[in-house]
Length: 253
Image (cartoon, rainbow, N blue to C red):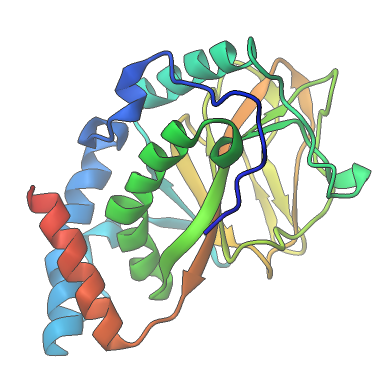
């Protein structure tokens, strides 16, 4: 369990839609394919039959660089609401660098677990219902915890990131919230190549420790990113059987 930092007053969401996790958070086609993938995962882990080679999710998961994946994840409606909510947040507290990191790697950020636990828990519900099936499809891994932040690259405070690993997590997911409202950006992976800015709501997924990377310079505007730092496990088939059963039941509700 993550330890909350002490804050004087817990921020309450202005838009209550963000406090009630719902299917509309997720890109429709991705949600449908995640639901269609779950029975196959369940059959594989419960009955030890079938294959994970032809999962419905595999048709929308792309691999532009070695072990770097992309997938449409969040709806544009959700991304717009997150941008609006973020602007409201900055009236109560600003983007702050992580003082535990060296200055070269610091970027302005809002850590949701600390600053807005309501939103943190809403977004983590998507980890359970959609991101876990995606990670099972790619690496046979599932999430056991993690943190989420909103990051901001801009010319005034921080226009680009330095080379780094995401040392506190196993899987990193970076989701642009406002592609088209800024110029520049993208993510470069050392000795692998560059992924240009993805469409709003699309997820860039990669292993945190093995993939050294950096954010490329913003030329104009503000680049807002929703960043997941996720802790994962390779579990026994018995545990995975229980997991897919639980997620499948949640989808049926």
